[in-house]
Image (cartoon, rainbow, N blue to C red):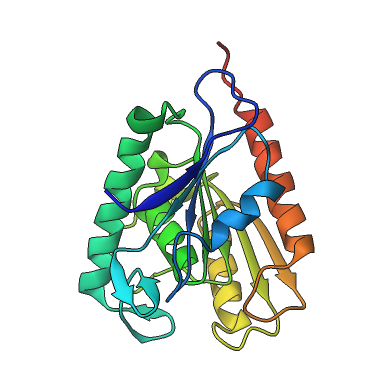
Length: 214
């Protein structure tokens, strides 16, 4: 299992919905958990650490260049992450039908990888300042992506992963009929307050739509 931090919901009733946070390259599980305070109080927050060391932090995969993950490490991380997601409901009594992924940068690519290759396993993917790994040998059935919820946010001034990658992600998800909420912000490679507000609004809407009885 992946090393991770948890933050149970303030208001739990039954098996709570969850958000799994996936950090960027060279970071760690303490990075994104700070966002938890600004997200819907019903959510069980899980912040996962990538499996490979990259001093002083960790990363999900080696890369040849931006947009081009190295297949072996990438494939290993996809497998580990799928297993991790599958084990969460039993470990923390989380609602298996309401597990969302939120990833930044490399973590966004991982969220996209799970959403593309195993869309039924998650309730939605939030991809921030990243890209879809469309050339990484993932087995993707585009027919399974229609109506799947995606939130994609990207900075127009991003010097690390240029905005073109955000737009390619938008165009692909639009072409397969995904339920896409796409936003560009006047920012660099970062997360800003207006984006966080939009993310929370999106999550809250989805939680309201998928509330289970009991």
